[in-house]
Amino acid sequence: MGNRQIFRNLRVIIGAKLRSIGADILSRWILYFKSQPLTVSQKSAMVFSPHQDDETLGCGGTIALKRSLGVPVEVIFLTDGRYGRPDWITPETITDIRQQEATNALNILGIASSETHFLNQIDGSLQNLADDQHQYIVNELVKRLQSFMPEEIYVPHRKDAHGDHEATYELVQEAIAASGIQVELLQYPIWMLWQHPLSFDLNFEEIGNAYRLAIDSVKDRKKQAIETYSSQMPGLPSGFLARFFLPYEIFFKS
Image 1 (tube, helix red, strand yellow):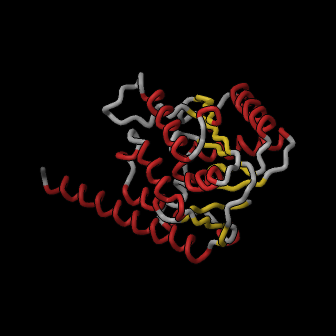
Image 2 (image 1 turned 60 degrees about the vertical axis):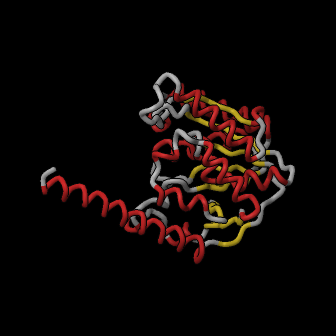
């Protein structure tokens, strides 16, 4: 290996480390200094997840807390997660594996298979849907909303720095409006806080809408559920994952 390649490798390693440090400082600043305390409610909830693992990372503790209180919760996955594939899994089996991982993780959190729904849209497609496909998804979400009638909805943040995540927010908002239901919306960040602080896209008013929910009593269950996603966890940066093992979850209210 030449000196130039060694230098490039060092730049990548140092850059990744600096990003991790910056993102950690940013998320902890919001969590411990800018967020307001939130208590788990008795309101029925519907969780929308772009991929199999987002729901557990973003609000697995909240799901577990609600289910421990007997509160009804349903989870809807929008995509099939086909591109979250490590080398040791074949393209033909990845979607089945991720669906089974999701079922197992949610069972740990207290969600039955009958309360878990998969729309199986193509991973990575949600921002570029044809009009008829867009309307089909909205119609499916409206059916789920009107059938379950949730009092709370959990959805990825509208500025979550990932195409499928931001599109999920927009699709859910459109479905809420079309369904005519009254519901409280809470946004959970996944990738939004894994950014260099200079790239962070929230203004002070939006940061002021941050809330923290203590999940100490179910933290171990959330960790177990996260680790169930054995196809996904090895490929995620340790600094990125660290926030999801904290005794709090962060949400943003509109």
